[in-house]
Length: 483
Image (cartoon, rainbow, N blue to C red):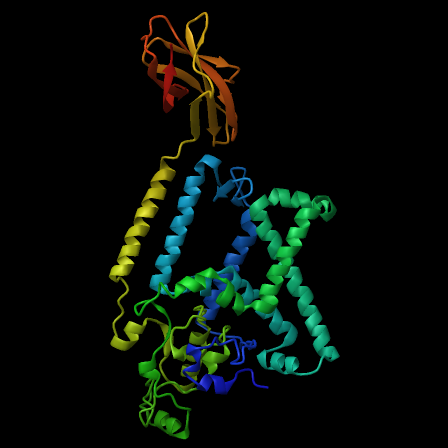
């Protein structure tokens, strides 16, 4: 059994109507990707391990007593890079998310699916963890294909069993890591100490998501990118002929032809010291070795151009460079480039569309940065108490108000309230403390009393200043109603 179907690959037009990982009859064509090696694979591996370390450790790193990253959607608690966000800061989280989406759009329009190939957790775990473990347990792609085509003997049974156990164990660890981002690492460790029986419902959800991760890495693999991932769907609407992506230089590579003795003779006749030579008989540099296909984790032939399945993993670049080095031709037959650059020899990155995206991106970044810079440590909300108008007290006419102060800092903050305009109004607390506790929400009521020398109007606009240590931190405008 061959690990690649050459008949399908030779049909250069078939890719337009079919996915590379699906047979013409609709059945799954299992991809036995060969292990790539080269400069891009090395850099992707280094970056991948760094990102995995960040993903695993970030929930357990504390900054100012806060988890470094916390995304508790259920309780609306968010901590980004050690900075807590309260429910009234949700607009900042929404703007950050929107800015992130625009960033991905900008990068996709400019650099293609660089997210998929270099940064996506699914790609990183699949290529750097699970596929490497698979190589250790089941051998290379040829051995895997031969074993799967053979009978269920003891060798196949024990290897499959070990692979299932290891994949499920790692998936369980990944599910715990993602759970720590939602319920916090402290709570997760407490639950672990309590045991699964004390949190059956949560443990059931954890096992469910473990199974989902297991199936993604054990069975679905590239299908998750091609069918389930929404990013892959709208990616095709963002790229154009100027998008830089993993590209086959068809002007240099065609007409492709196998390496022959005539090529060896031409290479020998090349002047010594020359790094490259021209193949005879007007043949292109592509030696039609299919090495770029055998390393592709989605089973495509990059020589057919940019395709939906390509995740820009760069494995084909490394495979092609390796072949070019062996035959003595220049590297870069498959490289990061654009269709326009290959056809016309000129790359045009900053098109009108990219400039428009950049303008929107700069506006969003500037807006979010400004909002962060002017974000207050204390948020104050003053509302008239619902269902009330006025009351007559010994001191004068009075209105009731509700007060809420959110302290976003890690220390207690004293505060005072004064009516600064107009004169003749005073504030009387109803059991309010004189300070707001660290990272606490103070809620209570107070009364504003109109004294005898104040203006006698039925509705008066009041200005209230909130001060701490003599400095004004908030000014509120509210109304006072009187008969």
